[in-house]
Image (cartoon, rainbow, N blue to C red):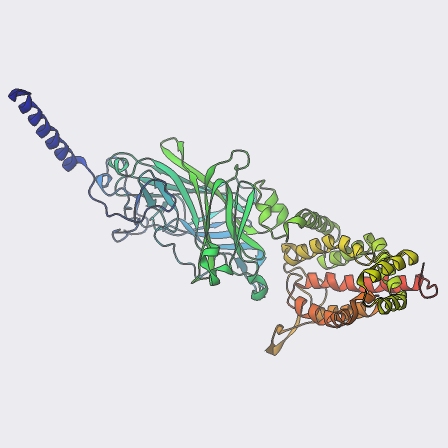
Length: 588
């Protein structure tokens, strides 16, 4: 290589380095402190606290700076420009809610149809719910950074009050926040009367130097960090029902709230795939975010269930990809805050009804059928106490042939008990011979040893389905029956004791005592198989006590069903005894 060529290479290198340095100095972004990357980002991403460095808010009613031509457009693309907005109060014919401009998040939701036990509207958002911390709330995920929206100062284009009466068209309100670097975030709520759901659209727009740093927006995160409030009088009974849930594809996932106090990791999980919904629930209400068209047009995303052990509350977030919209990239999530009413949730056609606790999965179809039948009966018989009694009568009539078969079989077993004892004494040391002789005896006396158990096993699915429906159906909440039973969804407290008792508390519940008495009566008149011996006799004596302890704090609607069922069983057993003749020592 000659000297002239070498000199040309050196000069070219100096020019290129000098040009790059000058360009970086004049138009490059200023250094940004590295922060925690997005937990769901697949590429390295720096995250900046959305509220860090925000100056004192201007006076109320101030408007956000215009992005186009604004001097702030060359500032930090992940630092929000200061703005001051006022809370927005929304009232429909079903509920009232409040939206805080800081994060454009719900801070209150009050029902106009459901009351608290002590009076006043049901409030689903806990009063002690703090604002979400950095990285916990809504977010816009870019290619190379995550914009934390949990503390974004939004301004609403309406307010301070929005009222929507029955028959009104849907109404929308848009909250807007802008960063110093020119990124604009719009969060639009759309409400309509007669529905518990509303939609939230998250749109991200902006160009210029900001995009050179963060890249293109790719995902939107919708988060719920407040948990769900307690709404019932009996907290012990309600605590068992708190849980978080998510549906990805066709699989339901549940996380019980009680896991938070033992091992918080058991209450935390992230699911990836075709997102349907995620939410939290108590005994009768739920707060969920769902993809309205997720079944027809599956959307790949993430659902995350978590919780805060300090508050004992569960949280969730859902991430969806951002789709291109005119001048922006956006995503939508529908929210449902309201009663866990099976038919109502089913009407959304996204699978939300699967969040209703119907017990073991194998019994869900039967429990759903029972629930639908009860709601149908309520049209003609507007008293759920009477409906429960009618259900008890109908199930007893339907299974009467099986009950007859079971009772007669057990009675025949009692009648041949002397012969069975004689065989047991005769072949005491020869189990194989004893089994042969016993089978021969059953054949001669025309007795099926399983005849007393098999009919009961066939009835169990119906009993379990009824148990699940009566235990958690919101239709029974605050539904009166007669007298002191004014809430079939709660124990029938006749009065309160001045002291508490182990297992029972300080409420005197009369129905469980009546149910335990009927259980004792039923055991006394029901024939028992002789093979049970002393252990079975002891079990029969303990059964009423066990049922009393087990059912004492249960909803009065469920105890009422069991009490009526016991009384009908007692009558049927007595009737079968009267109409079944005895022949000698054993009936053929």
